[in-house]
Length: 313
Image (cartoon, rainbow, N blue to C red):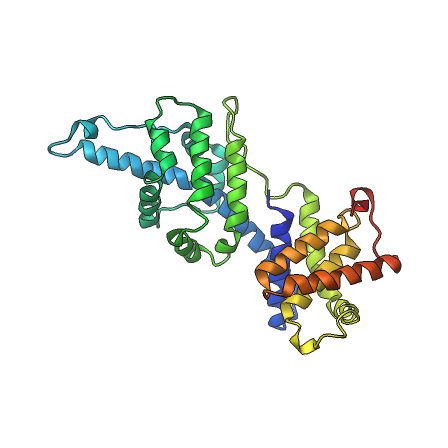
């Protein structure tokens, strides 16, 4: 399922776009936010069918080799371990994967060059060569090959980045989160399963409520939150506090006050980490210091009330 960290990131990006454009239609921006979440879930399925396309390409190459006028012994008797990979077959035959891909019109038909590039990249790896040389065949071994591929070959791949950019401007930012989801899905494959156990979009309805409430309350209370933050940044030149820092702190403030079941430490860690990726190099240290003061003040005022697990931290 889509992580809370991804949902927080989506909310902050939607807030940034709304405030920077001086938009006045919160409902329209929220629809765009929810659409971006849907697109992240689309990417999960898009990546699940990627090894299926690579295996099909490999099979086509073997078939072309067999049809040579003077085929070699290797051409006529190729190693079919990869094209017969059971984990890939399960993905190809999955109703859950296939139905979603068809309904959302996903796939890699328009990216044959990418498939060729990824195949060539894969077959040069030591783990692929070791896999192909092994005489054993098992679902676990097949699944582990795909895990290594997703973990090692796709995070830093210019060809994939370009293809994703062409399909959706949102997808490159989501790739790291989605690759984790794909690896979890592969690791959960079992011989007894009739279909691939795809992850749901949300862990439960609370996640959808979380991202909508976070967005709405931060936007509605943005001015008030900024005024509260200013009390703890008076020694700073307000003009030099970057917009994103203020936005991250205002969103964190909303979460601290509005979600009693989320531990304070979780909220602080999440927004400090987000600042490392989406703001300036020194932002995380600055935000950490300001948020610590805000938490202390809000706690004394009785505005932070945590229940259950939220009492921790």
